[in-house]
Length: 214
Image (cartoon, rainbow, N blue to C red; front, side, top):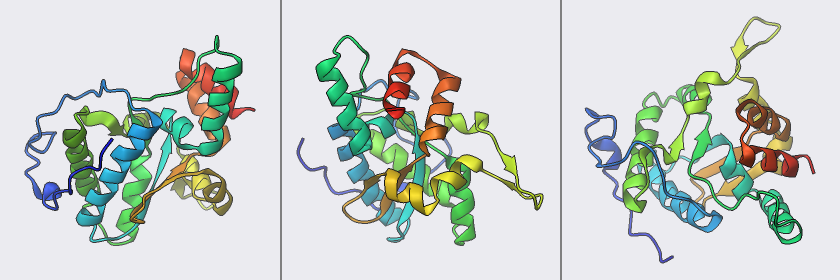
């Protein structure tokens, strides 16, 4: 795949009167994303983020099938399993990137960026338009079902996000860094990844769980 055309710096300034910011998009993404295509999409996305956030680097915590594709160790295991046990399901594509949006917004607000959700959404939709994807190629639909916890101090916090951004997990499970340094994707910890897949549970999730437990 050739290089993407230069991103448009005005995308996050478009009207948000419609849920798709004026873009002509399907709500659901039906385009399969291989590892290579997903990386190309994310590279373009990172350039849009650089424009939208004035070159401020930031991170997103992710879960789901995209983590299985982007984590080099897990992806290598998947290829190995496909070679030796071709009868088993194997992960070679996904249709979305699941992000933990609620804590991203909180983290951005702590940095003084109060319109981060709007800017992020604009970049997601502009990327969808560029690559012919559905609007939900990156989404936080699962946020509503993710648990919250209460610290001994009485403060409510996001245990999945909190575990993901610990130094050890960042070191072991950072699955993508854009070449421009604007975007880092960090996978949820393996035990949370397994837990979330057990809640959802499909044939593909069963294969993913086997890989995560190896």
